[in-house]
Amino acid sequence: MATPQARLANALEAIEKLQADGRHAVRSGDITRDARELLTRNGFLREVMRGWYIPGQPGQPDGETTAWYASYWGFVVDYLTERFDAAWSLSADQSLVIHAGNWNVPAQLLVRAQGGRNGVTTFLHGTSLLDVNQPPAQHGDLAVVQGLRLHAVEAALIGASPNFFRNQPTEARTILAMQRDASALLERLLAGGHTIIASRLAGAFRNVGRDREADSILSAMTAAGYKVREVDPFADQLPVTPYRREPSPYVHRIRLLWAKMRQDIPGRFPPPGRVNDLERYMKAVDEVYVTDAYHSLSIEGYRVSRELIERVRGGAWNPEGDEADRAQRDAMAARGYWQAFTAVKDSVRAVLAGENPGLVADRDHPTWYRELFAPSVGAGLITAAKLAGYRNTPVYIRNSRHVPLSPDAVRDAMPTFFELLSEEPDPAVRVVLGHFIFVYIHPYLDGNGRTGRFLMNVMMAAGGYPWTVIPVQARDRYMAALEAASVGQDIGPFASFLAEHVLKPAPEAARA
Image (cartoon, rainbow, N blue to C red; front, side, top):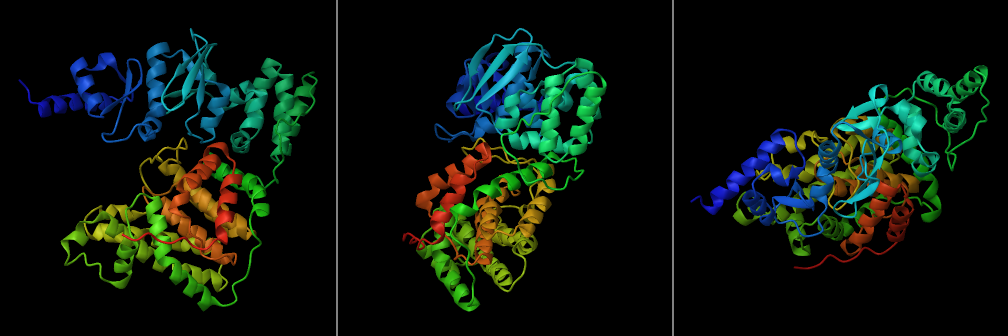
């Protein structure tokens, strides 16, 4: 009889084979009952619904969402393909959201399927799928992206609901900005006699500053004998920026998020100040180091104390001669934080000396990141490749529906982010969006929160604000505010949260 270890190993091999075949979902019939029960009991499988599972991570507590959100889109493809073969596609609205580069997990996914039952299927963590019995996108109207069957962009714009422009304005504007001209849309509008849709799209193009495309739609429809009346489907009007022929949706998306969110920040923040005594400011930064390190590391789940941080700063931490120090993950994180903090102080001095804060952050943030992880690399806890820079693999945020940008998208978005940061005249906007957009992009596999808070404090200095500590006691509010901005595009709670802490005395660091 096989040992328990051998049985578990055999069961894991079955899952590995399914994953090697490109499967994200595991059905009851894919593996034996014994293997399924063994893997579920040990946390390697998690049940999504009766008869359907996803790979899990042992030791994860109930309510942990990361495994589900990381598997979500792949699971959806496997589940829908099993039910409908190729006779399904996402709705036009959801297709446009994906085309615009927004891979956030929706609370409810709307699917058109031949033979759909017009019912809701409940998934994990409050998510669900509604499949309606309607013809899916086919042939020239179809685009397949990472296995998802979508309406092609032009077909989706024709089929989009009027509510899409009001409920998903960033995605709508991103798609419109990506259109090279109106020709492909016009062909469909004229062939279908879509006067109401033409009126809406003309108004939408006008809203984003694409007057030429708006006029082209109106004149072509009129010349064909159709009566059209331009209607703006958006609920608001953003300042029109010069149109750039940029094919990446992520560049447009970051620009649009910035333009939309910056309007909701200044009134929430205290007035900016001016630093007249550089050395006094730097002395205050030094004095807050222990508190800042304790709270910033604790937010990320490290167990650190004031005494550990003081040992690191005072040089008593000795990874060469002390085996405990060499093996202690938290000590490595504390040492890395001290080295990064020291590098960030140089950046603070640069902006207080008059350098452009966005350009300083662009130039210096790779150094902050390398210093943050150098001790762990030196101790062999992580590989040297960790210091290469922006990530080359996907990443997921624990308990968040926000799916950070793909590695290729990171490389599109980061230059745009720093360009916007360097051009932004309002100090409060630089503080809030400097932090938020950085962690929204999530350019690194680890350390994004700490680096984002460092960036925030460089922007604080540039605005004459003091170095600001986000206390670990406020972690839940902090994360909830970031989630509201990432998923709901509501920057208000995050701006108010940071404004509340700007002038507060720094909290104490806990003792061991």
